[in-house]
Length: 177
Image (cartoon, rainbow, N blue to C red; front, side):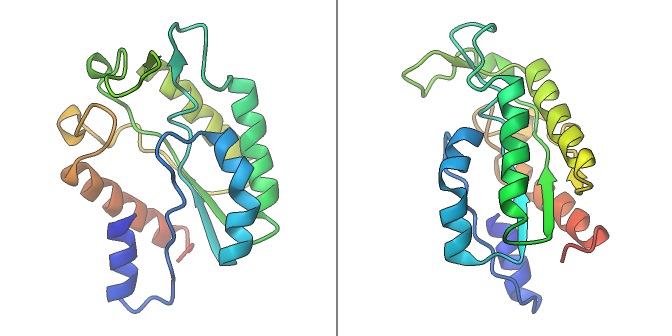
């Protein structure tokens, strides 16, 4: 988001970019603070880039952090809340991870795991909900290579650059900015 913010600032866009992402958050966490965040900032555009942490497993693959059904319901509720603040709403899809570095996540005190097959399922839910609500969706599953990931999960500078370029084009093509 920092690259996007710099781009808007240096190209005379009258857009303030606020990254409301909090490390480790999932859709449950975002829903708990979303109305307050929006009320404080009065956004003209809302771009959701959330879901990777929802797709985590806790200890075993049959114990998702957020079930697919709850994830879908949370996305719908986020859209309903967002519509109270803006009619320009879009979704950015998930990126794949380097599983061998994240089975389990080395920096977590809980045994949390990521699985690309599950990430694809959660990404499909985002795409489906976006389509059902006639909202733009940007698929990023094909974008990053394993060498674009810093720790197996988070993009490095090259990964961020690739994401920025694709997101910028998506926002312009869909006349969001």
